Length: 126
Length: 131
Image 1 (tube, rainbow over the protein chains, first blue to last red):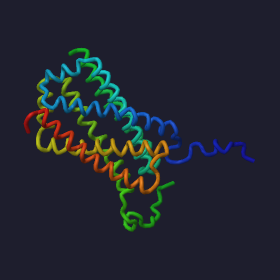
Image 2 (cartoon, chains in turn yellow, green):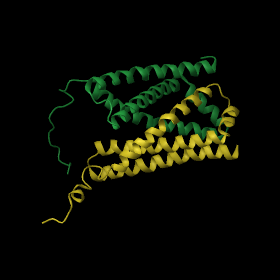
Image 3 (cartoon, rainbow over the protein chains, first blue to last red):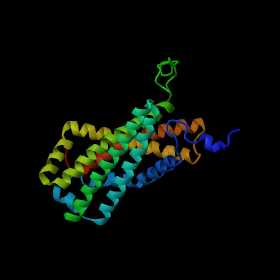
Image 4 (tube, rainbow over the protein chains, first blue to last red):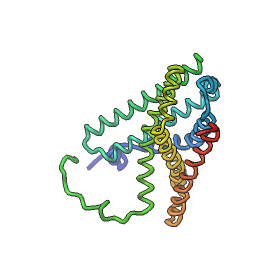
């Protein structure tokens, strides 16, 4: 007679092994990205005729820097969650799947950090 | 478990193409495409950090014919993924699952994406004041 509960029996199955937090965080970042994307695109449109000095001026505002950081964080986290599902859907050899997931996680974190550091540097150091 | 190449029954070769499956895979394709686009965004931000010469080079590259074509493609990807994303969020709260609604909202997303893409680019050119 098994002492496992049905939930315990179900946990850890499937290509992803677990996913409630992933599902919720994907929707949360999606929600955040709705206004952030609008702001980012509108900003880019206003910068369509910008010189280098204009861009530096734009990034010198703490509100702009803050929104850029929120945008960067939401984009790369949402991207990481999305690519994770793509890998889990198409890569079925366990070691290839794990390797791809590690690469996706590291790449999105690194690229996101690079963007954030660029914004912070320009904001703080002019 | 999946190391053996067992035969699969035909699916893509035989199933009738419908807007539902097309939009679903387009959502994934635009998502991955946008992911590649983050590389361009990172390049642009780092060019700003690197100084006016690097920035001018980046602007020239992104403003070239090929650059603008790529940016136009990314604009459409963003518009589509954004609009279809809202459609997904509606499904997540349980709304819009009836098949007529799925088709109607689907077409609304497609048209909105095209309109948004064109609007963004027309506005951008208007701000620039020239081509």
